[in-house]
Length: 288
View 1 (tube, helix red, strand yellow):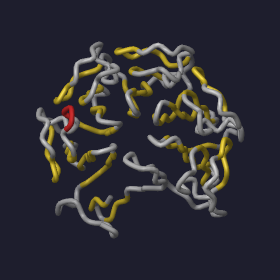
View 2: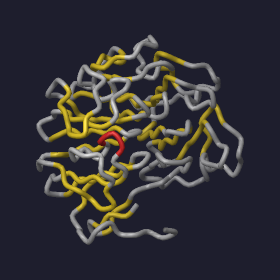
View 3: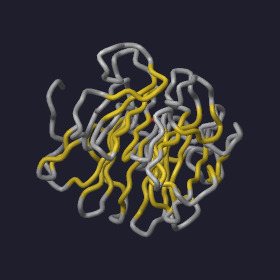
């Protein structure tokens, strides 16, 4: 489709998340719906069946959907965390490497925000601590090592993490003071620290500052972020112009996209190198 196509006829969608081959949405009544390829149980409906329209998962207390590469998770209103899908690297966080086609609970009842990357997951708890699990060959868990884990470990000390986004073997996060930090793979400058050096611990982006509002990492190694002044910034891989700076040159430091200051939200395509693939809402209708 070259134009927006409505998914179903409902007008009650609240929030959505897109994976490499799947989609997921939560309605205003707290119900959770998934669709797309069924590989490794990625839809979480207890099957490996491909779904070309939304199918409901049990329950009506879901609030925070996150899709990665063939694995996904959500947080419920009671702050419990549930995950499903591919689990070869322990990315489901249940202490195993067993693939799950239905949601399984991750230990704890204080989860606040979840992000799923390629083979790993990372989340913030209600006390603003940061936790990660799964593959860690490039240091993407941010604990100063490159050892993988199938259970959550504290990613980095401190109780000051505000928002996190997992990409392809790298992570970006914003602290409560508005500073932006990245770690993991950096072959294309996706960490934005003006190098291509891999980092197993958080480093601040080359731009520095304490005015970062929102960050999004991608499966194709480029990063987008919005500052509190409404300006949009990007860095990393730029083979197809995904940074949006009118070039196809990779950038290892943040560059401003356009000259506007009214950017509100960002999204990055998980199945390809698209940027600003924003999901938006029109009277509760869901459009990709």
